[in-house]
Amino acid sequence: MLGPNSLKLIIQIPCYNEAAALPVTLAALPSQVPGFDFVEWLVIDDGSTDSTADIARAYGVASVVRHTTNFGLAKAFLTGLDACLDRGADVIVNFDADNQYCADDIPALTAPILQGQADMVIGARPISEIDHFSPFKKWLQRLGSWAVRMASGTRVDDAPCGFRAISRSAARQLMVFNNYTYTLETIIQAGQKNIAVESVPIRVNPDLRPSRLVRSIPFYVRKSLITIVRIFVVYRPFRFFGAIGLTVIALGTLIGLRFLGFYLSGDGTGHVQSLILAGILLTIGFQTLLVAFLADLLAANRRLIEDLRSRLPLTVQPINQAHQTAPSHENQPRPN
Image 1: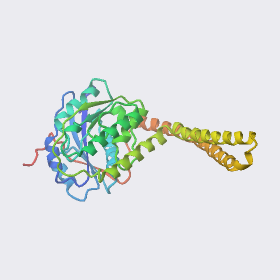
Image 2: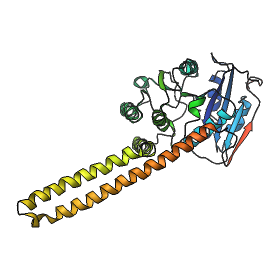
Image 3: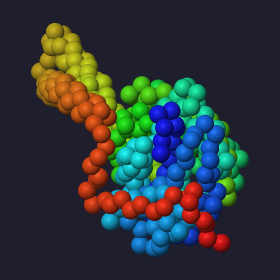
Image 4: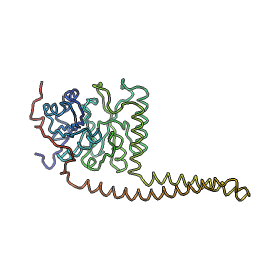
């Protein structure tokens, strides 16, 4: 039973067909972490067709949250946050099921939250030292992290890293709109919501399997760019559409002034097409500004809904999802 001053850490692990890798991952996870009175493990089985859920229970995972179908990593992550909050987590650590991160770094990841310095802590992998990353992928990781820093206003060294710790207050504010991944979106969202974000160095383990998210470099680049643009549209709609509208208006104005110059010099009849183009651009620009105002009103309404959601108790489970609880790993021996 949690006391009034007890702190609870839940380590959540999104899984999809991870029967082969999950035993290695669970064997590495700690059952005690400095600063916490209780530590639990929670597995999100994202519609696996193998024995992922059974293996999780056999290894003493406190709770298994199961999707009846595969929703994708982002939805599994969000389901895990809701389940952890529902179970009273003060801090949530997200850990990948393929054991690519070093579980011994969990105390370093949670320390800034316990010290009141941050509400979200992102692990920073030693990208330059990872042998199975090609030079181009290393460069792409750095470029992507730079783009996220610019978009979010945070100082995150390794934006695509999924190994992260999140405080209860921050977790209640996060929403994931993307079905592909949560990593970039949650950082940009945290920056827009003024959630304190820090990075800490972490270590990595050898690969147990190839990445399922990065099917190819062009695919990953396209998905990441779409995510960044979409977040700006959702969280900074007036700035996004306003910048487009003002740019189009400025272009239309310049073309209109060009026509005016020809007209005043007596050569306007040969440049009527410039007048037509200027009129079209100015019309599009003013319509885009109108869209910016309407989108800003919708964004204000969304912020009110998100604020209301963060204040309500988490008692309703997501549709098509079911919680299945197993005995705590503290009370159940691990199989040999």
